[in-house]
Structure formats: C-alpha cells, structure tokens
Length: 130
Image (cartoon, rainbow, N blue to C red; front, top):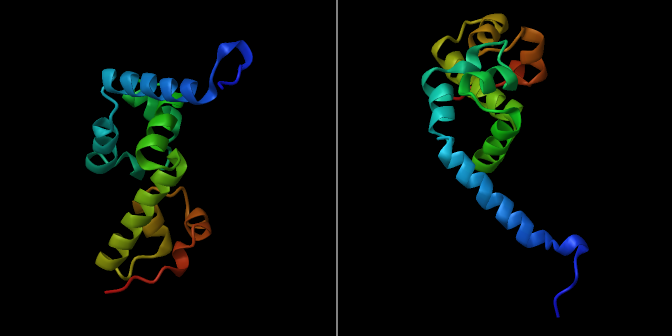
C-alpha cells in the first residue's frame, strides 16, 4: 500500500528525478568534470591565494550551486577541501624537490595565503618520506 505524501510528492522519486535533471544540466553545460580538472591540473588555479569559489565560477561561467554540486557529486568533497588537497599535495612534492625551502616559501608556492594558514593545516610538521 503506497503512502499518501503531502501534495502528491514522493521523496525518493523526487530525489532521483532531481539527480537526473542535474546530470542532464551538467552534461549539457559540459560540466562532467573535464573543464574543472583542466583548471586544477593544467592551469593550476589552486596556486592563486585569492582563489574563491565565486572567482572559479566566474571563470567557468557557472553558478556557485552548480560548482558545489559538481564537486560534491564527482569528488565527494567541498570546494575548500579539494583546493587544500591540491595545495597539500604540491607542498609535499615541493618539499621533496626543495628540502631547504622555508615554510613561507612553500606556503607561497602552493597558494596558501600565509605561513600561519600553512601551519594550521599541519604542514609545518609534515614529514616527507624519500
């Protein structure tokens, strides 16, 4: 026996339909991920310490909700976390190549606003294994 839902809406069916609509919009706009990956991996926009979700949206010509949904759906994380992940991975790589680099230089190279933020991410205690 099917339950009567308020205004005839079925929550699971509505969620599935909304997901399908979102995927169609994403594909129609070419946002299945390659444009975002190119900006991250080729252009390395995450190195810009002034990068915000709004500035990235403007560059991609999409809204913040669309960007957030794409990152969540395709990467299972948030804008801030994915940007910090790119920066942390670069910090690890950079410290291997430049073992005498100061925290300030590493932070600046990787797009962190300053060494204090770099320290709050725990990178000052990061041990890079060879």
